[in-house]
Length: 139
Image 1: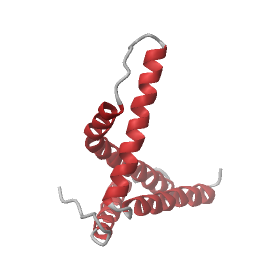
Image 2 (image 1 turned 135 degrees about the vertical axis):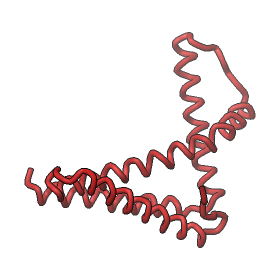
Image 3 (image 1 turned 180 degrees about the vertical axis):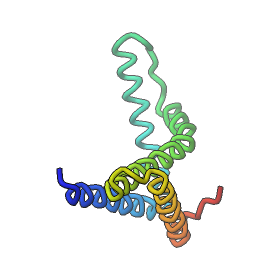
């Protein structure tokens, strides 16, 4: 594949991923928490169905217990997903920069990737200050 095509594809993937992150962070906290809790709840139910089917467990918790479990797992899972989303962004950016520099300037690619991703993350945290029910995260 030609270098130009690789550059266009990787740049496109990075930009699309940034747009996805920006749109997801534009959801208010109630909607965002509700969606992630709902997804986790479905995952727990599916996991229980599979383990029950294979005889690993024989658990049939109430909807109240499933809801409590999903809420308990929600906060740490959101942190893991947040880190994973930015890992994918960093992967796209560093791959793009490595193609630009013909795989010869790894340290420069790494430093630029850190600057680009940190800059985007900072601008996204600023963006969240304008979303109802969200605030920026300071670590």
